[in-house]
Length: 141
Image 1 (tube, one colour):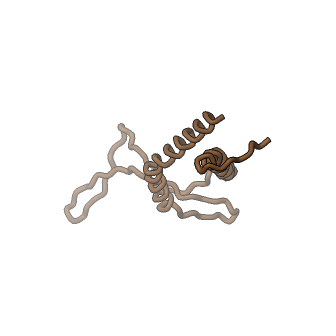
Image 2: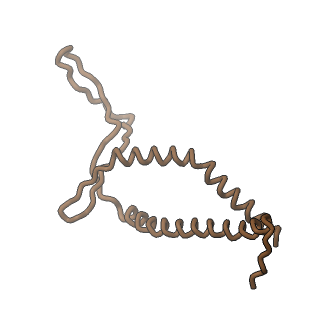
Image 3: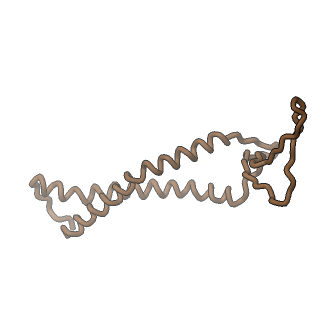
């Protein structure tokens, strides 16, 4: 039984080390996503209460199309340009609403799992702590 407790503590330490070791990279991803979300956070609402979100689309010009140009009146020459990004408003799809609807209960289950992991760590480490201190705890039946 003592071997299982030691293996349990090693497993929990490995899980926590993996979690703590990935915080830096995860924080960078979170920060990038937060900044992108903050820049595109403007939402509009129609009269029918349907949410419309601002969306940026990256576009690539077709190879066979001609390049558009603007006329510069000061030097009297055309200035070529291409469009690489379009910003528009769109309604979220049903899949988006479904994913958000499933993510909220998923967060609840994640918190329950994290709480259970903490309780497991405490229950595994308590008997070892009492043995280290020198207290004798009667076996629980």
